Image 1 (cartoon, rainbow, N blue to C red):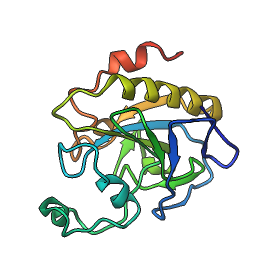
Image 2: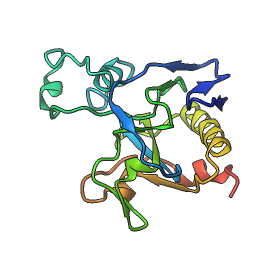
Image 3: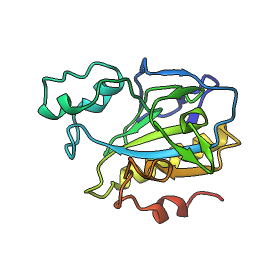
Length: 182
């Protein structure tokens, strides 16, 4: 797996590109942070198309009662990692995806400006899968090879602790970070 010059996944047989309209230009700064999230739509239900529809502005709010509770707005992430390890890219890493919201990391606000967002299909209530950890490891290595300034890794809860809890108590930080070069 690698990231091409346009900021998209390449050489990745279990990857899919599904461009989202929910992005804008990054300010002139390096990508320094990787932010890990969890998401499932409806909550705690896996395998559906809700996340892809949310990120592509095609979510049918009448399809599930929960969908009517989601605030109107446009959101996205650079990547979405399914429970089986399938990886979907929505936004080029060269662009700013809208995943972090109000956020702060090491005294810097507006983390979307300098971060790449990875959503893991999951919730705060269940462990993540071996396939997700393996794909996340490969993706992290590809991102580091492409973005030399990428040194930070944080959960959404680290950069927005008042608002967010993800990736949640079941994300095994030691497992994820153990095999990554320092």
